Image (cartoon, rainbow, N blue to C red; front, side, top):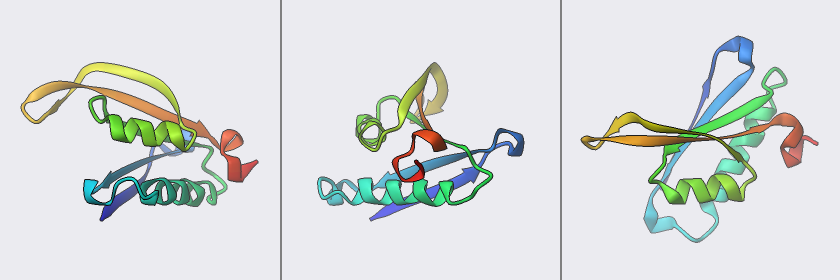
Length: 105
């Protein structure tokens, strides 16, 4: 159904990167929203982490909608910075801070 991950970025940044992949067969039922929200809650349960980022292929509108829906803010758009599926593609970056995350307030 899904895959999720957390990767600690550079320790001095106190930032974690999250990523996800969900089967379209399970779309529209709220599973992705619930899973990624829980994942970010887990990140912020670690006191030393203060920021979460998610990077994705700019063509992946479903993931971008999910990021916006759960409250991540789009912070960057890198043009043709990744070679994916035999072509150069853009990457978008979404992020939130502990102070902005609803369960951390």
